[in-house]
Image (cartoon, rainbow, N blue to C red):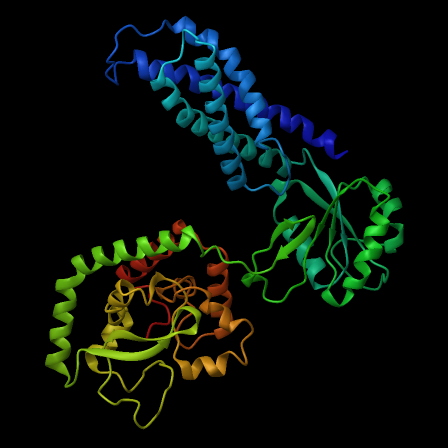
Length: 466
């Protein structure tokens, strides 16, 4: 049943891919050799008929290359970014095959300019065609076409959450038919059937294609009996893990000498990515200091004129791997403001602030000197906000996964901050947002957070800034 429902989609995607590839091949020739946009050094370029004659070979190689790169591994849970990776690999392989065969066969049509332009046009065209195809398919599924049926094993919180998630994404076309449970006393939005040993019969009777195992962790000993029951059927089976603080997890699988290893928390912040992030931080911090330097000098002068004491406030914070460093801020409080109170969090209407300090905090301008921490490599532009050691010792014993925040460099701004989780707000929610950032980090995510930070500063939407 799985194959029957996916084969028409595979065929449609193949047709769209071949159409986009054909258009890219012909367009590359027209743009490079015949449009006049690009100067041609050698005027004796091949006739357009040779380009058309080469097209069947290109399409045959496209079928081979695209299938080899997994571009037709259709799944209702497939994400578009998986299409992007597959298309880039497929088009790159196709271009290598076309170039190798045409030059090996001494083909009369082998202009290098066309072969350089073709992969760019082909990748763009195929991705556009796929985006439109998946969008159209999603609309059709929302209207009831190309539906598949699913069972959810369990009736607890995780099972109900899974059912709600599937129902909220009708574009996937997965309809939850029922929950399977040994104990029928639980109530759910869908019927509860069972028991679990009758799974094979239920799958046949209800025409099931997908089974989601959503049992709580204290019932994982029953998963084995579920798999025994499923061994008699051909369905897609997925396990929904019941792991606390899922926002902090990024599940991955790796095979090592035939053994499957599941990664529960792996940051993308390692290897080449560390270099990319550091390069972004340094370059953008240099630009920011160059642009904001005069403005920062004005703030420094105003602090000197309005309050006795140093311009900068230096405070010990913990960064990458929990290592301490001195974080810089423009001073917003009188000297020795914590001499009587000791270390405390800032609060609304903090009486320790100077008049200028209230403005600097509300606008986050007091954070600008941390650009020098970024240049020194102690901080990043984006990351979890650094905390003081005295608070870390307290939080790590009461907040789950709190120390995981130190797996990356701390930042001037972060995903939690742009979502309003700062100041005297829920620390647990802040940690969840920080861990989500760590496990889903990429350069575009950083740029998005920076843009949101700037917009919030410019348009006065600094929630919980005091």
